[in-house]
Image (cartoon, helix red, strand yellow):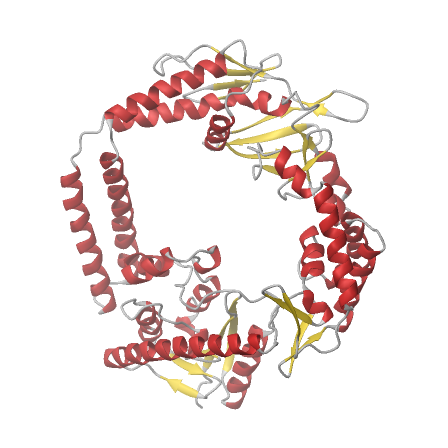
Length: 561
């Protein structure tokens, strides 16, 4: 009796699409149907959502090949978004099953891979990996079964893949030309909230359209953006595209003319020809936008940016309750708060509210943290001294780098030709890659070495340390210097109602207490002071808060509370 064939299914949703798209589900259904027709048993289904096809799998082997693929790395370096620079986790998991299966099923080959450049080797890696395991590639859409028999086939596939990429580029360019022509004739294209495309017409999701109508009615009737936001998160949270609605959701809905069936081109209002059943009238859209414009002109978001442009802690503060980044606001000075307190009614998120001003002349949080800046000064100083003691010539390093790159290329060639075992390849390629990275760093450090510049930098470090340590520590150093040093010193501050957990850039962490200063619940932390002094890195400086019990000590510094 013949043994039943086995397979895995791999589906990929294109980068830039919404993560809740039905794309992967439809692909998997098509692959299941092929397997059922051909009496093939599925032992696993794997997906990558919102992911580019030009990416290697997220495995040690995949990353090692990516490191040796020069054209792929050039392509990756040009990508501007993180999603197009990462690796594919789902593909890595699918490849782990290759030794157990006969077929690798995809809807069609572009769901599996696209070579970003004719000289890149992503296609060779993907197909070669299947070939090494004796696995055939199945394209469910066409029913094609590709056994990937020999290296000549791989070369032919590379030519076909290059031709396919040229055709895709040509189709994309033609599509953009066609799109521009349709735009001129009054057609619109949009992925705005509540939009659905049905028979090339812009329609609106019945339930989500209620949210849009509610937003316009609310603003026109005098409700604030905050009040509107709270209301839709209470009544329509399940209809949000993300976890909840945000202020930007309100502004984007109000600003988009698609909801009243028009488009605006070069200041001219044009009736859109492909919009079915607009949600609101043009007068409602115009009135709501005028209300928002008037509010902005009177203050609000614009005045905040003009008045408070020194925000060195933005992006470093996180809510101790939900873990999300804190948002800047104003309340008799700058405050940081968690938006989930208002967006999702999470009460615990409101207790971590943090103030940088008690009044407009008192920067208590900045002043309390200022003594910690000396940590980055000492780290900087140590880096300079370490660099100045190195005597390895750049020429010798460059020769060694060429030798390492040559060894990597030979190793990959041997592995591709099945001349080396997997475990040996993994071990050696990692050692060579690590050495290559270290050599490049040494070359960069030696090339950038400039004694005169180092002397100026050391003088500046001494000047900054003198300001931080002086008796006038209650005065902030310059805003540029403070912003530069705070981001070289502090990596993250988690804000709790009674304390702050500070994670330093060097990986050390410690906790300092917050003190209640008035009946309204405002809190501060003790000003820090720096004891000892900067003496060529010999004496260990100490940052002291309050009474000064030791809470953290390293080779370079102490922190006491």
